[in-house]
Image (cartoon, rainbow, N blue to C red; front, side, top):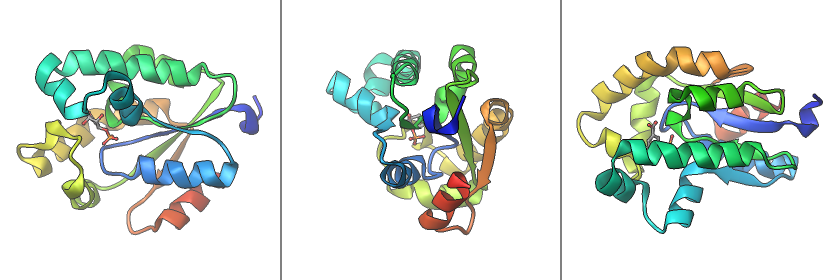
Length: 169
Ligand code: S3P
């Protein structure tokens, strides 16, 4: 499938910059950008944090999967900033590996991630021991991101513009 017809999907850990890079890419490619956490919040009228607290993580993961699969079935090519946890589901991983999606793993060192997650409020999993949690998640998920990725782009010490150029290349 031609790249201009494929969805461009950004995956990677919390704090790596998927939403920021996704918006810049969508501008450059003149495409609509879908941010899975924002869609979930708009659709449910609740924040990610509230959904985790009231209904638990499995309920959040089900919504996350629904939004991802729906975005991947859109007829026109999108830029999709997928939430960090989408790779935990085998169904999601299989969908990401279909030919209509080009998946870019934005990869950063846990130290870079820690620096960047300080301002976000939608990450209840990081409330306790963010450094240790990020490190552990990185180890748990690294292989899963690698499994779905067509391309890996390293973001450490790179500006938004530099990462966007690297993704487009
Ligand atoms: C999560 C990532 C978050 C959000 C939730 C859980 C994860 O999204 O969906 O806090 O498990 O990696 P971002 O990757 O956009 O921060």
